[in-house]
Structure formats: C-alpha cells, structure tokens
Image (cartoon, helix red, strand yellow):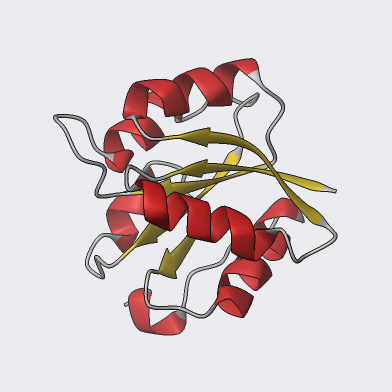
Length: 130
C-alpha cells in the first residue's frame, strides 16, 4: 500500500484528488494539508511514502519552501510536485523533489508517477525536463 499525503491549498482540488485516488487499491491518502506549515508537520510526524505537493500554495511560503525545509531528511516522504509551472525542474531536483506532474494531466499519469516514485524512481515528464 502506498501512503500518500496531499498538499493543496484549494479545497475542491484536494478533495477531487483524494476522490480520484480512492479508486486505486494500492494507494491510500493518509493525510491532507492546505498550508506549508501543516505539510512540514505531516512529513515529519507521520509515515508517508509520497507527498503530492502543490508548488503554488497561497500565502507567504510556497511548495518550494516545503521542499527546502524537508530536503535531506531521510524520514520524510518522497515528493512529487503537482504544478503548472514548467520552468522549475532544475530547482525541484536541487531540492530533492523526485517527480513532477503537470496539473493538466490525467489521473493515470499521476498514479503512474506515484507508483514510480514509491518504488524508488523518478517521474519527470520529458517535456518538463528540458
């Protein structure tokens, strides 16, 4: 079972992701956060395999700040950025983020990324890896 945390500040999007992932027997959403502070708390206090992290979180801190805070912490989940930004792959890699799923993707693309990252791989789409 792949334990996933959803970090998204928009309630409707977060609920939609949770509902969509519910259909996959090998994935369970174990935690949700709408703020960077809550995301860091979840990552450091719960057992989570993969964190789906919105880069454009509202407020002063961003998803990049979350990744920066968690960088190098072996107990933290592996992070997949879920974003519409296409020019930040080098920065994501520097912060230890191991995947990126464009927000316009189909759910199957997200599920493949979750599975790949949970298995120890990376998940960067070719068009975002330039």
